[in-house]
Amino acid sequence: MTRYPEIADDLRRRVLQGELPAGARLPAEMALAADYGVSRGVIRNALAALQRRGLVTSHPGAGWQVSPAFQPQEFAELRSFAQWARSRRMTPGGRVVRQRRVPADAEDARRLRMPVGDDVLRVTRVRTLDGRPVMVERTTYAPWTIPAIEALPVDEPSVMAAMLAEGIATSYGSHRIDTVAASGEDAELLGVRRSMRLLRVRRETSARDGRPIEWGDDRYAPDTITFEVHATATRQMVGRAEA
Image (cartoon, rainbow, N blue to C red; front, side, top):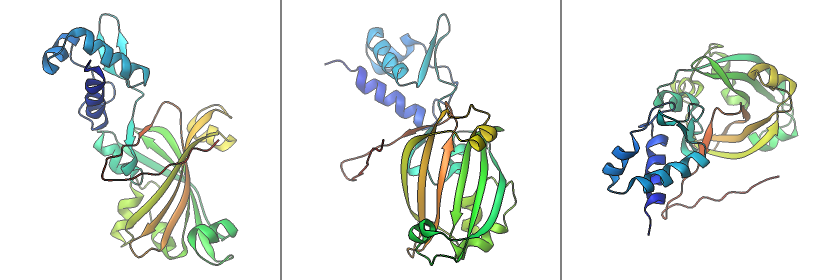
């Protein structure tokens, strides 16, 4: 039995955990072969498998490197953009482009378990990595969180950390991932073409006592973020694909 799938999985783990960050040069094939105790051909098969997934690229005469466009984010980290970015040695940033109180509509009432017509806070932010716009974040906050959110600086890089400092701790989150065509606003804020397909994460979060905190829609520019979902025998993860 060839070992290349096992080696590919280990190299992928090293990329995901930041040991081999985006743009980093991989050890030479002969060095990897010696490290794993296999032939150079097995290493090439493992690297080719990672190349098909967009994790690594090959440059004639220069060897292999982690794709500069690959910024993996594990499913468990979805609720903390800034924390994830810093773990990858990147500088997170953001700015509020629109913020206003509005009466809750029927969808707000269902998602936030509140009466229709009570105030919610809608916030649109652009999130950045090393100064580059990578995500448009549209969030609707429950009434009990509004004072804390309105008090944040417009360029607050870590909304979660700021909320935690105010005693608002996220204990549960659900995330649904699909793609969507960029709207005119998405295109302008991210610097992409209108109707380009964007990765979308629709999320809902709640506090320890079960109170809903927010629901939102995050849209990522192409070639910026790749999400990896992992499962073990001791945990169950249920997913559903949508057209």
